[in-house]
Length: 244
Ligand code: ATP
Image (cartoon, rainbow, N blue to C red; front, top):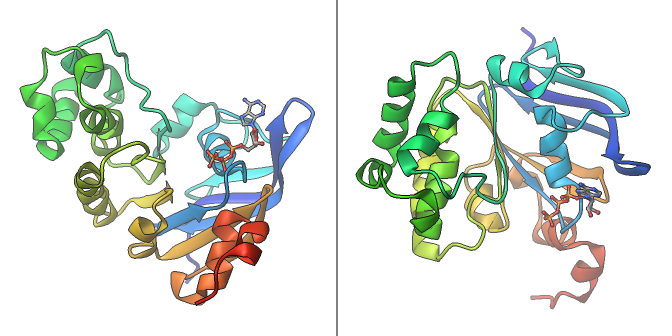
């Protein structure tokens, strides 16, 4: 039996203008798996996610979603095929109410009230704050609002880009309780996270990226600390990291 990958990047070269950021990158996330995408700042993690979501079209290579070539498929159609991206930086409308934000996030094929109810079931605080402007929410609540879409439909792939950034540890715990719930469903998750330990514990597969190329793809158990330090902080940091 062949395993269908939920998401594949095959030999992808992508970048911005003339600058190539991903160099012939291969990445395969099996259906239902939890993947951690790790690498130093500027390694290309967000670029991988934007390419997967269709926000960036690769110069060469192929993007495959649940067995279907989506390289030339626009973002909204990739969403319809089962891909959800939660971008870094809490893409919410600060001047609109929480309720309005939730309704805007509802995927068009899901009845709006059902979509909103699903999000509120995961994050009850959003129901209590429904009439409040999104900009007046705490940072953690804003992140919950930004993540709501991930819970509004039965996605095949959810991309989570730095969902804990700038949040206090207690709030990160809350966010990760929701991520855990998502991980326990059938969805395949690709997670970019600065708190490496948060994702390594739950990841089935780890992808290390450096300068737009893959330096490791495999189980977390196959990573020793030196390799992880090198892969996450960059080789220079690993060389200067204190040994234990
Ligand atoms: P970080 O951990 O800092 O978020 P990252 O691994 O997600 O980094 P990317 O955001 O994918 O890295 O950026 C990869 C490279 O592409 C970086 O050198 C960055 O400066 C560059 N880059 C990102 N977005 C753009 C853009 N819109 N135009 C030009 N260059 C860009």
